Image (cartoon, rainbow, N blue to C red; front, side):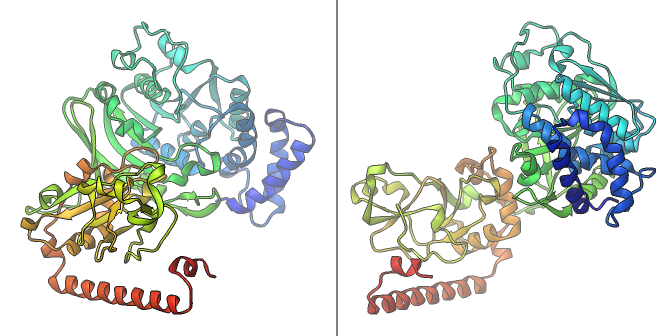
Length: 537
């Protein structure tokens, strides 16, 4: 195996040299073979010989240096190497393909990785940009493979009926854009796509890939997760999954496209071409790390190889995706809540807060509980910017006034992982009263439910509870809707959490309030306010 970190260091120096000499990535390909030989011979950290698995080092070259340079000028977004390896390993394990196609091949990395595992396969790609297609040919040459690249627009080629057929398709199609200049009356444009008016590139990309598969062929494709969750696309999903058997879904962490500044919420969809009727279910795997940190730096941890093995073996995951006849997708936990599980809405009232207009904020008045106030421990009720509102606005919001015993959690955030991450209980209210902001969800137990609010708090602070909340998150940023949360089935909480645990927590809350009162008294005696004290180093 290649020491990726050592390779990156050496490639950075080579890259600077080539760039200083004015060579573009395509022109530099001829020099790379000599430079790669240099790296493997002179650097003890690089033990890979070019007569061995040269594809690893070649792939790193493209990912870390050459393709990055092309992307800057050509608007290309690359599949990270660990994700490319996931697609290649799944495809190669499911069948021995004669023909492998990537309709959006870019520099050909996906085909290169499949070719390393299936050396007898015929590799075909389609790429609209001539310079990038030239890079794909160069990558194939360096890796000792033959990739046939058609320089044309994959969407137009599909509509003309000219897309090659394949036993396996691997792809990372364009997304986040609308396909322009389409013949909306073309026979190969399905009515479900035509009905959308403006056709998202990711949906048409999926259509192109599925249509290119022979019956029984395997698809492994990178997509935004919205392809599964966007409700307005139900009709199209119903269409496309009538000819694609869903095998597995892998949710990728937000950091996946960090090095390449792609999208935050993405997934890998694995399917098999077949005529399908009725509801489909498939394991929904969640990757924790693909080798990159949030800053885009390599961290050496990658769980995708293990996930690939589980997909090939047909193993279940802790979550399952269910695709209904109408195209709607539900992701649910496979961890059973038992026969006594109950809807949260039957145990508690669930509602979201409200944000006041700018003119309603002030230096004092009632409190506005914001996401930043949630601590995942005990609520300190400290004065912060814009967390006090005037009495007139507050009095009009009587429906959402907080009460002791309310469980509050984060319901909106710029990243999905923050939803439900901090969960608190109102154990004491300020004398002025308080209301939740529009980003805070409130769960208020019903008197007849026979449970303590602390038991709800324990559950939603648990890994199990947090996982269930995460399954309900919608959007590439992150939103939790009160109707979805109310419909959530939770286990019998009294069986999970004892009255003794509730009593101990209440003692802790009481001790915390006493600590806060003594702290405030000490600052007052020192002539300082809580707000000033918080700002001290």
